[in-house]
Image 1: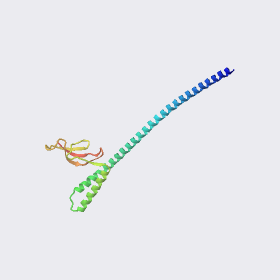
Image 2: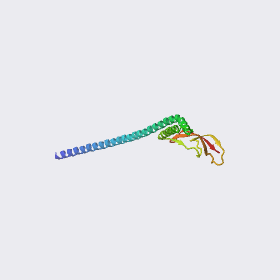
Image 3: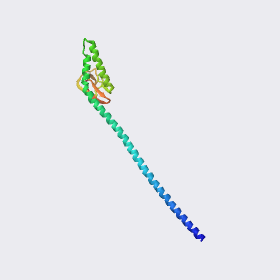
Image 4: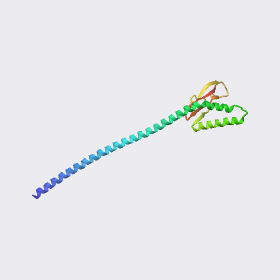
Length: 173
């Protein structure tokens, strides 16, 4: 009888071990599944975060482009006023105070444009560049280099690399 009890205890212990092993195996599989899900969620999170960051950068760039486009449109409309102020400052007058007033307004206008990133396109003495200059005439001059700009009819302006208005120039040779 004692042997039967021992055998039953052994069988019971073995069954408990088998059940414990099954339980541990099941928990390991659950843990593997949870780890896989966590990796998947982490990967999706990283992708969404990267996509969001790219979207923010793209939106910022689009806003800057829109701002520069609107700014260049407005400046293009007021450039004739700048041309007229420059012409007025060149005119000889007996009233020096009047001339100083025109020059001050012109300087203020130019400073305001510079503060918004507007730059004058250099032309005289430069080599003709169709991206920046518009040739309205050409002259033969053996003393000048080929495609050298010898006269500027109208100043050109740009913001960064975007040309607002091309310079109207006369090109040699």
